[in-house]
Length: 225
Length: 91
Image (cartoon, rainbow over all chains, first blue to last red; front, side):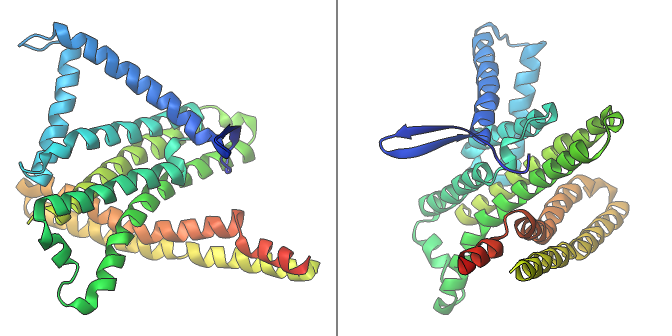
């Protein structure tokens, strides 16, 4: 479980495309989330003014997250909320997926690096969109000598963001693998549930929250005056 | 040749242990953050929600160096580049 297994190799236009365990597990998580989203969309027609049951859950989820983003980012930048709601749900449910004994998609550097790169691109694009020349100017603060250091600081942001999530999920995976391979069968009843509960659910939720809020703060720092 | 390879592997393991040692400092820093947060929560209970969210961000930022150490240790143990360089060098 320490190595990411490779399931198939596809040949597309002369290139080898590797379908690894991570990609396959991400597809499963995505399929579950898409089915849930389609169910929510189909139920949307029968929603009433006074919510009850299923509608309560959906509405409170969306509302809590919208309020959270608005409180952190302010009114003007709160339109990034849908994307980060998606990131939150995806990362948290991939942690939950690992409680079934599979490898979590976030325990591979590819997934977390992709998510952190999107944050980096949003940081740069929204910085130019909202502050125009001032964003470029902020790289030359306080002096033009500091330009390389500022650029390095900007590049270090997605790296540290992705390594944090990856390291936490990978450490949980490694500890559980050690437990599964080293202990006798008798100790594998019940005790892994507690370990999964701590490393996948509690740490997964905490790291998801931290990933989202630090991304929001980076974007706010780049785009807000 | 076996002796040289054994030296490289043992040096990698010692390096991994040293890299993991920064977990002690990371934990010390996190403990300091939590202690200060509890202190200020006790002083101002009405501001505890703000303090709690800021505390989590601070903990996460302080954890980064520990995570880097962990990743260096994992690379040293399971994906060591030095062994491949040595084998290429010999053959």
